[in-house]
Length: 372
View (tube, rainbow, N blue to C red):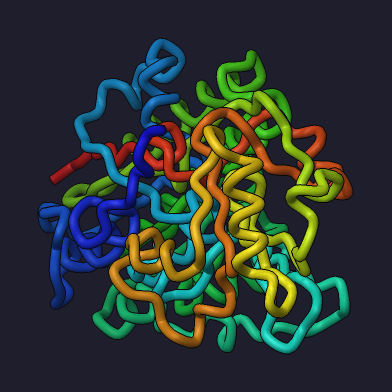
């Protein structure tokens, strides 16, 4: 059994990028990544662009492959929700509390979906309450730096946007041309911190698998977008291309809903297929932990909540108020296994998945183009 790749928090993790960007823009604070000073920074976030995936298909992304850079670790879980929280706050998952896609809400017997910002019981969740930490954009604005996010119009008023993108101007832009144009406008500010989001690569990976023809086509689109953004940089500016996680293609599917060894004693099954939060019934935690370890032996790391926290999976510390969001048992596949819930159609149909502590899911590129 391989050891989990614990994210390099405080040195070379995604959570270290925002503070380094603010430092490069002249604001006070640490610069753990050692980024050079710039008047404006543009971050292109390519959802799902793992470093190993990019290197495996460098021929389809010649511009990105030509850039200098380094490798970061995404954070745990290696999911969009958690990574957006880290990018938006500069905090580790244990500090910002966005610890996965499906999380238990204290006092509720149902799960809250942090991606779609929905609760089956109709519970209204305030983004400021669910993620109360100040965002990097609020800190940037206080220092005279204009913040902007360029992304799909559909996402502008979502709860997740409210949780991680407070303090900036949102530019709804649905095509590559619109995103380049919006980025140019936002970068016209004397000092600017602009993020451009591209999610079609991740969508193609989920539906058809990374490396599929559809995925390769979207990789080429992302490459072209990056090149056009680099060409649009004003003097004294830097473009950083980064991802939120990598991806694996599913092999064996284990259905935790129908497998008796995995369903006994379980109250709620949260997280996602590559990073499961298992919320147990009262008094059943030890039995569930033992059963999951036996059933998934050779397939997944299965630990208690305390073990996951003490191992630093979510960061050096986890705020006490976020501990109930973590399952009493945490199950993280390290092979190509996915732990699905057959009642969730997407988990049955998807080919590509992410969330675990493998290098394919954790290692993400940080690439740079500059006009400084």
